[in-house]
Amino acid sequence: MDIILGVRLQDCTLVATSKAATRGISVLKANDDKTRILNTHNLLAYTGEAGDTVQFAEYIQANIQLYLMRENDTELSPKATALFVRNQLATSLRSRKPYQVNVLIGGYDTKTDVPALSWIDYLGTHVELPYAAHGYAAFYCSSLFDRHYRKDMDLEAGLDLLRMCVKELEMRMPIDFKGVYVKVVGKDGVRAIEL
Amino acid sequence: MSDPSSINGGCAVAMVGKDCIAIACDLRLGNQSLSLANNFEKVFPFGDKTFLGLTGLASDVLTLKEDFRLKHNLYKLREEREIEPETLANLVSSSLYERRFGPYFVGPIVAGLHSKTNKPFICGFDLIGCIDFAKDFIVSGTASDQLYGMCESLYEPDLEPEDLFETISQALLNAVDRDALSGWGAVVYIVTKDKVVKRVLRTRQD
Amino acid sequence: MLTPDIAMTYSGMGPDFRVLVDRARKLAHTNYKRIYNEYPPIRIMVQELAKVMQASTQSGGIRPFGVSLLVGGYDEHSDSFQLYQVDPSGSYFPWKATAIGKTAVSAKTFLEKRWNEDLELEDVIHVALLALKESVDGELTGENLDISVISEPQEHLLGFKGTDMTGPRVKKLSAEEINDRLDAL
Image 1 (cartoon, rainbow over the protein chains, first blue to last red):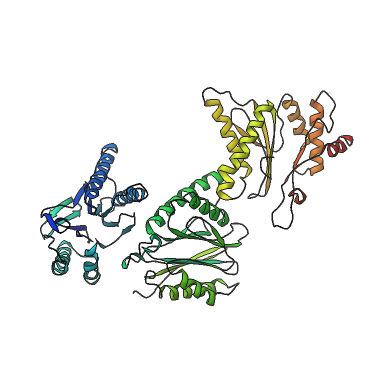
Image 2 (image 1 turned 90 degrees about the vertical axis):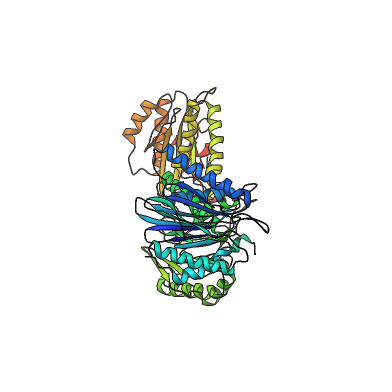
């Protein structure tokens, strides 16, 4: 099971995704990036069924980009982006073959200067959360987040929290997930960061 | 445990009092055994004195909330007045039955006072829209069995608003404590002819 | 009668009117009763009719409806009786009293003089018959004239007993009842 984590901090949102791409018992790739940048201030992280994930993520990415072009470079807010993604998944759920994709959306609202984090699963369940994870990682990390999360955390404190999570995951997860990529979504857009 | 109506958990209850009604829900949203959020409200206002509670699959709760918001707004534009609780109930029923062979996995309840006569009205539905008209109380969600038990023993007719609040709160609180998928906070609306009071209840956080 | 509380009549082409009656009755159900389990208020019913008539002025291959309508009814929500006129263009107007057809202008002038806010039911029937008499060449009889009254719920017209349902408010007067009133003119 892939790992994706998200934490909303004081002035940015952190998203961490595992680097391993696995198929059954094999690790196929150790530098897999499970995120797509939707627009300057929105990042989509995904897990789920092998083929569906990238297909869905890039479909969403294309549509958000299209909106940008049509609307004269007006960015969709994190809330609007999350509702759009939720709607797509909820519609897909009742189609012949639903997308089996779970996502986190890290965003930063440039109008209100508020960071945002959305948890959305393949059913179309959507919640805005201070910290979130999908899959088994959620079982290991939720308690750590509950104990150590403070809503006024700065970037360094957020990274410390992620380090604790990754340490815990490395200890308890049965397979090596090859570490995580960490991305920060803040005022100046999305950037990668070393943990 | 892949039953869609008990993946996310949550419950709601409505009661009739003397010239008033109460409707309440818990605040939990979970993914199977894992709790995700403690701010997921399941009761939504439609006009001043009419409320719709939606329990079941969270995705469908969100979808239907928006669907009924749309239909309610169109209704207001067309009729130039607020929708009556009875009318909303029939709208909910026909909307759900439209999806008879691919239903939304929800357990809606409607509660409200008539805009002019202030006559209390409550009712519940199954997932395909069969209406359950009740004189006393309506329960719904993963703690519905427990709620039936609590309501059956605590409820009495013609309660004043303050007493109705106490009754519905105790019924909900004690019911969700015996349901692993419900709880994590609760919200109660008490609706009287000229006032709506919303109260957020503190509950056990386990 | 379109719904238990709404009735309409026309001036113009009879066959077109029958089509509109069919349409209105069906729309009352598909667009309203089957959704809300109650009959449409008269204003909504009139809007649906006007929509049909307007659409026929814009669609290709068909002609507009050759009728003007008078739609009367009771509105539960505002507890009021209402009268509307609908024209072939699809425009509609609410009235206190009005007339349509060949002699509409003179009939309206007449009504303007005779109508007032506190006429009783029997009085308005009387005024309506007088207005009609003014503009009709031949003799008026109960056999060549229709009167529908929309007033209190008519329990006896329900056809069954023992429910809390209210009866229809629309009641068509019989030839006999009309003749009685004609004699009293």
